[in-house]
Length: 256
Image 1: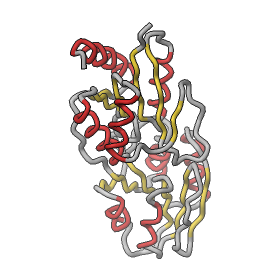
Image 2: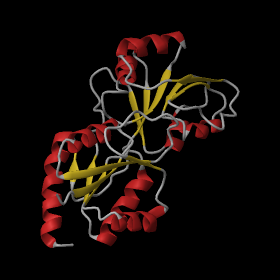
Image 3: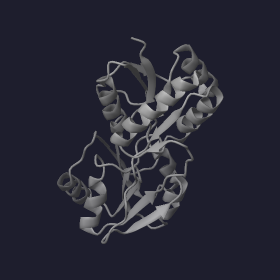
Image 4: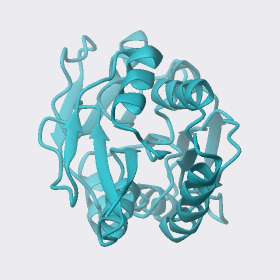
């Protein structure tokens, strides 16, 4: 059987779920690509390649060498560079690109959100007065908060923050979601947190901290996503499955 080849750029729970669903198909050969930033990634249901491609030229070469029929970008909503590279590689090769990106969280009654456009804006939004801050933004951008050393930070990440912050008052918590609301409430209370900083990543796995902040009446500084243009977008795994079939079929018919 001449299998259709699909490359998924992953690192999210949606990427893993989509890979699992596609792997059930005997007519498809699916590979999941992970950036390798997480030291102990979760098990995956399909063959995995780890590490970068070497920018757009490297990704273009890989797509051509592997005769990929469909490229799926299911990376984190804030993984701007790899998404930009995927769009450029798709345009260069003509291989269709499908973007799977879950919806962001919506503000509801009781939320006290300050929406900002960047991590630097989040640092500024904390203000000059010392506060106890829960940083739930991952490890890669935590160092930016050294610019506001007056605050006491609780930094949660899957892997250690390296190098650690230079700010004088920092506690670190290594943990992998999903996080239950009750546990998040207990965590915020135990550390006497008075403001939460988060990216608007969406999804259920880390939504607990947003609900916990709402329940406790705490403010949240929320970093919003930058708008990304893409012709083929899906917000759920089910939508992505339907679009994937359509895009692969169209690509094969063109004889590219």
